[in-house]
Amino acid sequence: MKKLDKLYIGTNTKMYKTIADTVSFLTELAELTADIDRKLLDLFVIPSFTTLERARASVPRESIKIGAQNLYWEDQGQFTGEVSPLMLKEIGIDIAEIGHSERRHVFGESDLAENKKVLASLKHGFTPLLCVGETLEQKQLGVSNEYLAIQLKVGLNGVTRQEAHNLWVAYEPVWAIGVNGIPATAEYADEKQGVIKSVLNELFGDAGAEIPVLYGGSVNPGNAEELIQKPNIDGLFIGRSAWDAKAFNQIIRKVHPLFMAKKNSDRR
Ligand code: PGA
Image (cartoon, rainbow, N blue to C red):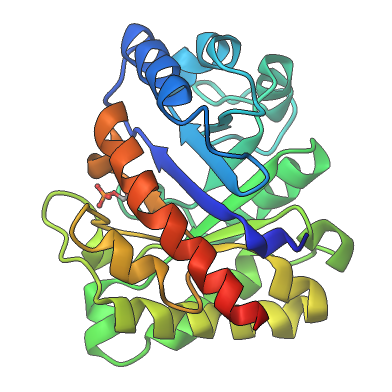
Protein backbone atom coordinates (compact mmCIF):
# COMPACT_ATOMS: atom_id res chain seq x y z
CA MET A 1 0.00 0.00 0.00
CA LYS A 2 1.24 3.46 -0.85
CA LYS A 3 1.91 5.89 1.96
CA LEU A 4 -0.63 8.41 0.70
CA ASP A 5 -3.42 5.85 0.45
CA LYS A 6 -4.41 6.55 4.04
CA LEU A 7 -5.98 9.66 5.51
CA TYR A 8 -3.79 11.84 7.72
CA ILE A 9 -5.86 13.75 10.23
CA GLY A 10 -5.02 15.34 13.54
CA THR A 11 -5.23 18.27 15.87
CA ASN A 12 -2.95 20.63 17.74
CA THR A 13 -4.70 21.53 20.98
CA LYS A 14 -2.55 24.70 21.37
CA MET A 15 -2.55 26.04 24.97
CA TYR A 16 -6.03 24.87 25.86
CA LYS A 17 -6.12 21.41 27.40
CA THR A 18 -4.88 20.43 30.89
CA ILE A 19 -3.58 16.94 31.62
CA ALA A 20 -7.05 15.81 32.70
CA ASP A 21 -8.67 17.36 29.60
CA THR A 22 -6.11 15.76 27.31
CA VAL A 23 -6.42 12.29 28.79
CA SER A 24 -10.21 12.30 28.61
CA PHE A 25 -10.13 13.71 25.06
CA LEU A 26 -7.70 11.02 23.88
CA THR A 27 -9.51 8.18 25.61
CA GLU A 28 -12.84 9.20 24.13
CA LEU A 29 -11.38 9.78 20.67
CA ALA A 30 -9.66 6.38 20.66
CA GLU A 31 -12.94 4.67 21.66
CA LEU A 32 -15.04 6.53 19.10
CA THR A 33 -12.68 5.75 16.24
CA ALA A 34 -11.68 2.22 17.29
CA ASP A 35 -13.49 0.54 14.39
CA ILE A 36 -11.60 2.48 11.69
CA ASP A 37 -8.75 0.44 10.21
CA ARG A 38 -5.49 2.21 11.05
CA LYS A 39 -3.98 1.05 7.80
CA LEU A 40 -6.37 3.57 6.27
CA LEU A 41 -6.14 6.28 8.92
CA ASP A 42 -3.25 8.07 10.60
CA LEU A 43 -4.80 9.86 13.56
CA PHE A 44 -2.68 12.20 15.70
CA VAL A 45 -3.03 14.64 18.57
CA ILE A 46 -0.49 17.30 19.56
CA PRO A 47 -1.13 18.52 23.11
CA SER A 48 0.86 20.74 25.51
CA PHE A 49 4.24 19.58 26.87
CA THR A 50 2.99 19.04 30.43
CA THR A 51 0.41 16.53 29.22
CA LEU A 52 2.68 14.43 27.01
CA GLU A 53 3.68 11.70 29.40
CA ARG A 54 0.12 10.97 30.50
CA ALA A 55 -1.13 11.44 26.95
CA ARG A 56 1.29 8.83 25.65
CA ALA A 57 0.30 6.38 28.36
CA SER A 58 -3.43 6.87 27.85
CA VAL A 59 -3.76 5.52 24.29
CA PRO A 60 -1.66 3.14 22.18
CA ARG A 61 0.29 4.77 19.35
CA GLU A 62 -1.34 2.33 16.93
CA SER A 63 -4.59 4.13 17.73
CA ILE A 64 -3.47 7.75 18.11
CA LYS A 65 -0.01 9.15 17.50
CA ILE A 66 1.15 11.82 19.92
CA GLY A 67 3.17 14.86 18.98
CA ALA A 68 4.95 17.74 20.71
CA GLN A 69 4.06 21.31 19.73
CA ASN A 70 7.70 22.38 19.63
CA LEU A 71 11.18 21.25 20.62
CA TYR A 72 14.68 22.64 20.94
CA TRP A 73 17.44 21.33 18.68
CA GLU A 74 20.18 20.77 21.26
CA ASP A 75 20.18 17.62 23.39
CA GLN A 76 20.98 19.56 26.56
CA GLY A 77 22.54 22.79 27.75
CA GLN A 78 21.98 26.26 29.11
CA PHE A 79 18.63 26.83 27.43
CA THR A 80 16.21 27.72 30.20
CA GLY A 81 12.60 27.11 29.29
CA GLU A 82 13.31 24.84 26.34
CA VAL A 83 12.55 21.13 25.92
CA SER A 84 15.13 18.85 24.34
CA PRO A 85 14.55 16.00 21.88
CA LEU A 86 16.03 13.58 24.41
CA MET A 87 13.33 14.52 26.92
CA LEU A 88 10.66 13.95 24.30
CA LYS A 89 12.22 10.67 23.30
CA GLU A 90 12.04 9.53 26.90
CA ILE A 91 8.27 10.06 26.75
CA GLY A 92 8.02 8.31 23.39
CA ILE A 93 6.37 10.92 21.20
CA ASP A 94 5.86 10.21 17.49
CA ILE A 95 5.63 13.65 15.90
CA ALA A 96 7.34 17.01 16.39
CA GLU A 97 5.28 19.94 15.13
CA ILE A 98 7.63 22.57 13.77
CA GLY A 99 7.01 26.13 12.62
CA HIS A 100 3.33 26.48 13.43
CA SER A 101 2.22 29.96 12.48
CA GLU A 102 1.96 30.96 16.15
CA ARG A 103 5.58 29.88 16.72
CA ARG A 104 6.68 31.92 13.74
CA HIS A 105 4.51 35.01 14.18
CA VAL A 106 3.91 35.25 17.94
CA PHE A 107 7.31 33.90 19.06
CA GLY A 108 9.41 35.09 16.14
CA GLU A 109 10.90 31.78 15.01
CA SER A 110 12.87 31.93 11.77
CA ASP A 111 13.13 29.47 8.91
CA LEU A 112 16.70 28.74 10.03
CA ALA A 113 15.48 27.82 13.51
CA GLU A 114 12.76 25.60 12.02
CA ASN A 115 15.45 23.90 9.96
CA LYS A 116 17.49 23.05 13.07
CA LYS A 117 14.36 21.63 14.68
CA VAL A 118 13.55 19.52 11.61
CA LEU A 119 17.07 18.07 11.58
CA ALA A 120 17.01 17.39 15.33
CA SER A 121 13.63 15.66 15.01
CA LEU A 122 14.85 13.40 12.24
CA LYS A 123 18.02 12.61 14.17
CA HIS A 124 15.96 11.44 17.13
CA GLY A 125 13.43 9.49 15.09
CA PHE A 126 10.40 11.79 15.33
CA THR A 127 8.28 12.63 12.33
CA PRO A 128 8.72 16.36 11.76
CA LEU A 129 5.45 18.03 10.83
CA LEU A 130 6.70 21.23 9.22
CA CYS A 131 4.04 23.92 8.96
CA VAL A 132 4.29 26.54 6.24
CA GLY A 133 1.97 29.27 5.05
CA GLU A 134 1.91 32.80 3.72
CA THR A 135 0.68 35.87 5.60
CA LEU A 136 -2.20 37.99 4.31
CA GLU A 137 0.28 40.65 3.23
CA GLN A 138 2.34 38.16 1.24
CA LYS A 139 -0.85 36.87 -0.37
CA GLN A 140 -1.93 40.39 -1.30
CA LEU A 141 1.51 41.14 -2.75
CA GLY A 142 1.26 38.03 -4.91
CA VAL A 143 4.38 36.42 -3.42
CA SER A 144 2.78 33.43 -1.65
CA ASN A 145 4.42 30.82 -3.85
CA GLU A 146 7.85 32.36 -3.32
CA TYR A 147 7.37 32.42 0.45
CA LEU A 148 6.18 28.83 0.54
CA ALA A 149 9.23 27.78 -1.48
CA ILE A 150 11.57 29.65 0.89
CA GLN A 151 9.95 28.14 3.99
CA LEU A 152 10.34 24.68 2.50
CA LYS A 153 13.80 25.08 1.03
CA VAL A 154 15.27 26.65 4.17
CA GLY A 155 13.22 24.57 6.61
CA LEU A 156 14.23 21.33 4.90
CA ASN A 157 17.82 22.23 4.10
CA GLY A 158 20.10 19.24 4.65
CA VAL A 159 17.27 16.68 4.78
CA THR A 160 18.22 13.66 2.66
CA ARG A 161 15.91 11.79 0.30
CA GLN A 162 16.05 8.88 2.69
CA GLU A 163 14.95 11.07 5.60
CA ALA A 164 12.20 12.63 3.50
CA HIS A 165 10.28 9.36 3.91
CA ASN A 166 9.67 10.32 7.53
CA LEU A 167 8.50 13.87 6.91
CA TRP A 168 5.05 15.48 6.92
CA VAL A 169 4.16 19.00 5.81
CA ALA A 170 1.13 21.12 6.68
CA TYR A 171 -0.01 24.06 4.58
CA GLU A 172 -1.55 26.56 6.97
CA PRO A 173 -2.07 30.03 5.51
CA VAL A 174 -1.58 32.47 8.40
CA TRP A 175 -4.72 34.43 7.49
CA ALA A 176 -6.84 31.28 7.69
CA ILE A 177 -5.87 30.20 11.21
CA GLY A 178 -7.71 30.71 14.47
CA VAL A 179 -10.71 32.69 15.69
CA ASN A 180 -10.14 35.56 13.27
CA GLY A 181 -9.18 33.27 10.40
CA ILE A 182 -10.98 33.14 7.07
CA PRO A 183 -10.86 29.58 5.74
CA ALA A 184 -9.10 29.20 2.40
CA THR A 185 -11.40 28.02 -0.36
CA ALA A 186 -10.82 24.42 -1.33
CA GLU A 187 -9.61 25.59 -4.76
CA TYR A 188 -7.10 28.01 -3.29
CA ALA A 189 -5.80 25.46 -0.77
CA ASP A 190 -5.47 22.82 -3.46
CA GLU A 191 -3.56 25.15 -5.72
CA LYS A 192 -1.07 26.08 -2.99
CA GLN A 193 -0.72 22.46 -1.91
CA GLY A 194 0.19 21.76 -5.54
CA VAL A 195 2.90 24.42 -5.28
CA ILE A 196 4.21 22.75 -2.11
CA LYS A 197 4.22 19.35 -3.78
CA SER A 198 6.21 20.66 -6.71
CA VAL A 199 8.83 22.16 -4.35
CA LEU A 200 9.01 18.83 -2.48
CA ASN A 201 9.51 17.10 -5.80
CA GLU A 202 12.27 19.53 -6.70
CA LEU A 203 13.96 18.84 -3.35
CA PHE A 204 13.50 15.08 -3.05
CA GLY A 205 12.45 13.68 -6.44
CA ASP A 206 10.14 10.68 -6.18
CA ALA A 207 10.47 10.65 -2.37
CA GLY A 208 8.89 14.13 -2.42
CA ALA A 209 5.71 12.72 -3.93
CA GLU A 210 5.30 10.43 -0.91
CA ILE A 211 5.31 13.22 1.69
CA PRO A 212 1.83 13.81 3.11
CA VAL A 213 0.77 17.44 2.73
CA LEU A 214 -2.06 18.35 5.10
CA TYR A 215 -4.26 21.44 5.00
CA GLY A 216 -4.97 23.45 8.15
CA GLY A 217 -6.66 26.76 8.94
CA SER A 218 -10.30 26.98 10.05
CA VAL A 219 -11.16 23.47 8.91
CA ASN A 220 -14.71 22.88 10.16
CA PRO A 221 -17.65 20.50 9.62
CA GLY A 222 -18.85 22.72 6.77
CA ASN A 223 -15.70 22.75 4.63
CA ALA A 224 -13.84 19.55 5.52
CA GLU A 225 -15.61 17.43 2.90
CA GLU A 226 -14.86 19.76 0.02
CA LEU A 227 -11.24 20.15 1.09
CA ILE A 228 -10.52 16.43 1.39
CA GLN A 229 -11.77 15.70 -2.10
CA LYS A 230 -9.11 17.91 -3.67
CA PRO A 231 -6.28 16.05 -5.36
CA ASN A 232 -3.39 17.73 -3.54
CA ILE A 233 -4.87 17.53 -0.02
CA ASP A 234 -3.64 14.37 1.74
CA GLY A 235 -5.08 15.15 5.12
CA LEU A 236 -6.38 17.76 7.54
CA PHE A 237 -4.73 19.49 10.47
CA ILE A 238 -7.50 20.93 12.59
CA GLY A 239 -7.64 23.29 15.55
CA ARG A 240 -10.87 24.46 17.19
CA SER A 241 -13.27 22.14 15.36
CA ALA A 242 -11.46 19.04 16.61
CA TRP A 243 -11.14 19.79 20.32
CA ASP A 244 -14.30 17.95 21.26
CA ALA A 245 -13.82 14.21 20.64
CA LYS A 246 -17.39 13.69 19.38
CA ALA A 247 -17.17 16.61 16.97
CA PHE A 248 -13.76 15.46 15.75
CA ASN A 249 -15.05 11.92 15.27
CA GLN A 250 -17.92 13.30 13.19
CA ILE A 251 -15.50 15.13 10.91
CA ILE A 252 -13.40 11.98 10.56
CA ARG A 253 -16.53 9.96 9.69
CA LYS A 254 -17.50 12.50 7.03
CA VAL A 255 -14.14 12.83 5.34
CA HIS A 256 -12.76 9.30 5.56
CA PRO A 257 -15.13 7.71 3.01
CA LEU A 258 -14.67 10.66 0.66
CA PHE A 259 -10.92 10.33 0.92
CA MET A 260 -11.11 6.60 0.19
CA ALA A 261 -13.35 7.24 -2.82
CA LYS A 262 -10.81 9.77 -4.12
CA LYS A 263 -8.03 7.19 -3.80
CA ASN A 264 -10.11 4.51 -5.52
CA SER A 265 -10.87 6.79 -8.42
CA ASP A 266 -7.13 7.65 -8.70
CA ARG A 267 -6.42 3.95 -9.12
CA ARG A 268 -8.95 3.55 -11.91
P1 PGA B 1 -7.92 26.39 13.54
O1 PGA B 1 -6.38 26.13 13.87
O2 PGA B 1 -8.47 25.15 12.89
O3 PGA B 1 -8.55 26.67 14.85
O4 PGA B 1 -7.97 27.57 12.59
C1 PGA B 1 -5.56 25.52 12.91
C2 PGA B 1 -4.14 25.50 13.37
O5 PGA B 1 -3.70 26.42 14.07
O6 PGA B 1 -3.42 24.55 13.05
